[in-house]
Length: 326
Image (cartoon, rainbow, N blue to C red; front, side, top):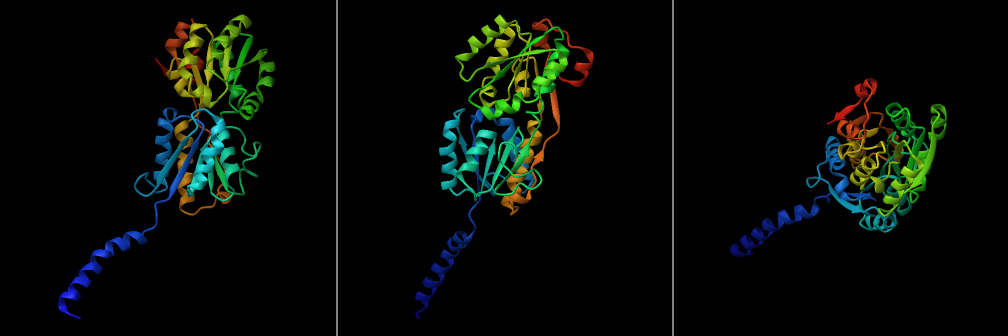
């Protein structure tokens, strides 16, 4: 071989080495994020989710990618979005909320799924047991469904003269409604309260809803945890004040938006665990071997400005247990 030919061949081989090396590098794993909400509701939660991934050694864009699928409060879109993630062959699907978790479960029996739900995941058919989930699902559960009776007690403590309490539910989420209502009736009887269930599933329902509350002379309102209500927390807070109805909801954002009170588990804690579990599965842990974790930290927020507008004085014992929003 002539020297010139050898140099040309050697140079071409060296130039090709980096390309070959890159081709042999493993592809970056992809997490599919399936939610029936919209992204504007998830800023704080996604920050906590990414922190949880970081604790497991993953950083989005560096050694893991995340494909987001948002149903924008339209649950009927979830099956197609879940099927798309399965077709994309993501490494794991994370599914916050019951509708998303059920859609993901229906779409695949092989891709690992990490859920985040309020009701008992055994009761809704997601896993066989909390300690040994079995199958391809595991996740994090919080106390928000179980905290419904406590929210009723908090309203009664703040407005002890109110005997008629309205419960706002979204009828398009029957599993969530069942979990929300469970336990409220015994608590109401113990407190001597009468409950009246009211429904809303579109924005057009809100004006009728609050007119009904005034006609019923409802002394307070407990709002069911639901993505539809999350997206309209500011509207609900405004209408509750306008119609002089003390209201309590699950999320801090409701009190921050002008609602009277919120009481629920910490978003930061359970979305952090959510991310950590996704990272552990990427590292090789099997969902069947990861027990479902339950978040127990709860937070009470009271908006003092709203209380003043409603003519309410916060009892000192209640005030001492709350984080105050001025």
